[in-house]
Length: 59
Image 1 (cartoon, rainbow, N blue to C red):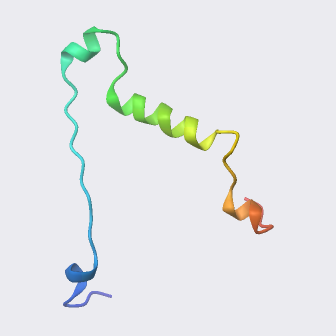
Image 2: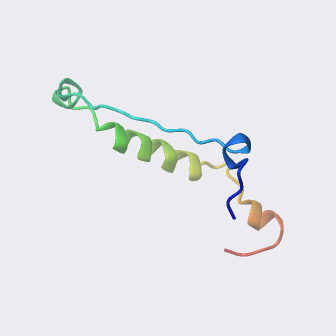
């Protein structure tokens, strides 16, 4: 449901990234792939615990 004060109590964030060709020429991964690898490392970390698992619920 939409209300007239919707934009007073909500917010959003945007991110614009420009990959320049010099980074690619230095054999660096595109920023999208770098962020994907970082995210995978976070979720596969040995200290990561699923909150669902903690409450006895299975995936």
